[in-house]
Length: 179
Image 1 (cartoon, rainbow, N blue to C red):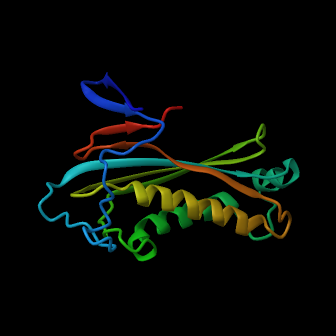
Image 2 (cartoon, rainbow, N blue to C red):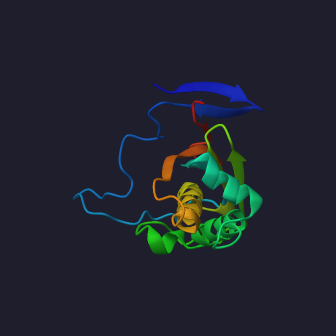
């Protein structure tokens, strides 16, 4: 069940199950898939943050950290791939609207305790619909790119925990995952 709290005078929803409604917006009354009509919605500033992890051996992580991966700079390549993916989300996810994104940031931190990489994407737009799918797509493709760059060394790399961390703006307000 969702809990509502106040932060900076805006509602923040922390939830296990989440969502702002009880109906699926991409399904019409007949049960057919549809693209939601957002033409009557006001353009507002919206931000979404997503995160995921790429788990690997300590030896493979050391190759990334020292720049010794044979395909080149793993983290720089993954950042660019994540940005490109965010910009092309509507081409990959059938019912997403094409959006004029105003900012995409991909942060990748190596973590020797995992061992692996933590990938975080932040996406911003001023428009009538949110950018959660763009942030999730950016993280997914950045994680896949890390895998692609190191798969010759270690095929058992795992991609885990891709999820929405936070969304700001729009009718449903501020959401932050229960961390």
